[in-house]
Image (cartoon, rainbow, N blue to C red; front, side):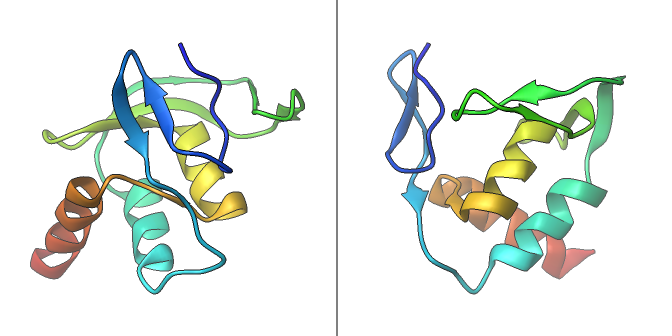
Length: 101
């Protein structure tokens, strides 16, 4: 498994997870809103994660899914703190879902 880092393209077992980061991007707030308030909780437990800096990040431990993809609390942290970009097809899905809700 690759180390998660907002400074580079992220790959896990050869699959591209993130597109890197940008200083800011127009869709960021909408994507954060979706990650925090959409999807169904699959797993929810107290605790924290360790991010790419090795520091403990105090975010809720959860896994959510919306039928298209699943994500955990650390993903929201990376989008919020480091402006990490998701794969284009995931961002497009999120923005389409927000238009219809």
